[in-house]
Length: 128
Image (cartoon, rainbow, N blue to C red; front, side, top):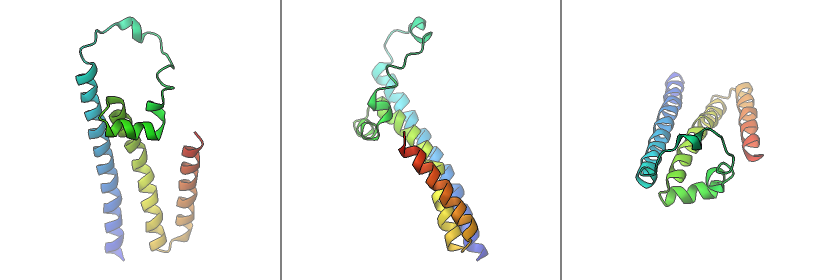
């Protein structure tokens, strides 16, 4: 029982470590793609003094199919957004693994609490 508990803790810690690492690498590749595609554009400081919502409403930044399409077609925005998405999904995966760990240990109180947390995360993610 103790060795299974240690194995689950190891799995949870590795999930966080690998998830964050992979997300960072994917976002870094997106940043490098951005430099390759847009790095020779002139830099104008006046463009960055006023925040604009115009590009934030673009589906390439917010819609999952557009992010996946951009990722598969090696667009800088697709890769950067996929890195952000993976970074967001990493702790969610940890909560899911914790739920299964509590169910396996028959710790019903923590399993229910974890299930409620997971349900809140999912419901908030879907109601965007």
